[in-house]
Image (tube, rainbow, N blue to C red; front, side, top):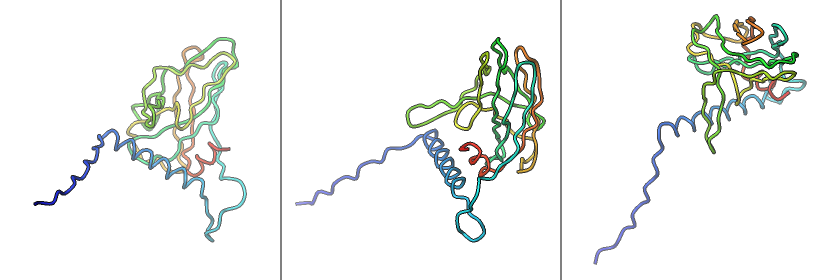
Length: 188
């Protein structure tokens, strides 16, 4: 009489997309933890306010672009810029295109959740309502710079050329800031 050995359950295989999504989530959580645990040289928590940085602003027509910055990219192949567009006029407007001095390919993207995963989708324009705001933030809508022509380091500046449907074109010179400073800025 032979003994029966129970079969081990087969592990479900993850697709490359699921693995990439998991990796993105791990990196994002790691960056958030690093941003929240700011330490001084003694190893104890630093006191005082989070590190601050000057953001970029510009005006074109009835539009005011404020709070512009670009976190130092974790990858050399992509960077993201964030800012707020406030429309003081009575007519809606839209950001219809963008370009940059460090990337030949700049696009508007939105982050879309699919249950426990998220993906980025290109959007053709960013509507700025009359007497309202359009906000580009981490985890939401953002300006994506693909394959920057140089390494972007803290202290650099990147010029964004923003073209609006009605107001026209404006240049926004955004600072490249550390991930820690960017996270502190986002939570302030």
